[in-house]
Length: 211
Image 1 (cartoon, rainbow, N blue to C red):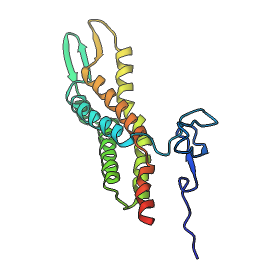
Image 2 (image 1 turned 60 degrees about the vertical axis):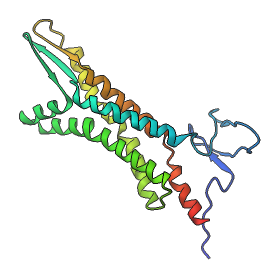
Image 3 (image 1 turned 90 degrees about the vertical axis):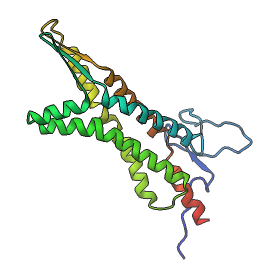
Image 4 (image 1 turned 90 degrees about the horizontal axis):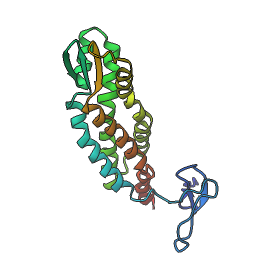
């Protein structure tokens, strides 16, 4: 007869969020407990995971609009001022035949942040609806958001380098526009949102379904 493996929670264990050490779960009336290795607080699930993730995702959606509408750079060359958004930069590289650069900027600066927000929204809705469909696939989606989040900063790195290098006074000058601030805010907020979401919530419905 095949035995169903028990979970860490069923075995009276809890994983540390910081160093991943598996520790004995504290008693309910014992008060707050800490990890014996790193000293971080121990929780069976991240406290207020969904509430914090929802707040951060909504904030990121709000900042995402001005990040793509407002200019990310302002270039002054021989008295001529030109402001460029992320998409206008993508179109410029496409028009000049630099398709690989245009593709990298579009994927890293437009597609990835939006995909992260959509995926996190989907995961939170599926958890709140207690969905039991494809938990492995949903967990992989979450891991994807964790992995690619930092690459969204590519555009900010490019802007930072241009601002630092192109300082030629009246001849040419590049300054960061307000869109850069909003875009960096979106990237940082989505990274915090992904960190706030507890993927173990995906599997809680599976445990209850098997009870």
